[in-house]
Image (spheres, rainbow, N blue to C red):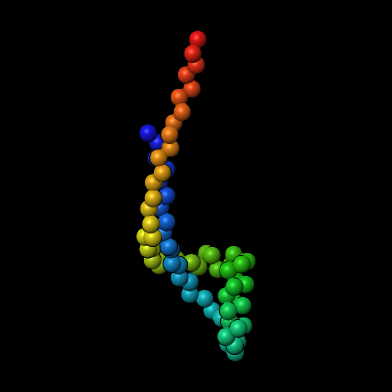
Length: 69
């Protein structure tokens, strides 16, 4: 019997970054999004927490490929 198991986890990562002074809230959000989208922040990300969300299993029926002669 073959079973496909799916595990869903929520991973929380944390990055400590420097942001220029004098930016308003909207500009800070855009600065963070821009750094993330360019991949610049990915190297700073450390897994901070992993929460188990769910697990499920699906049984896959294997078909026999025998031929009658």
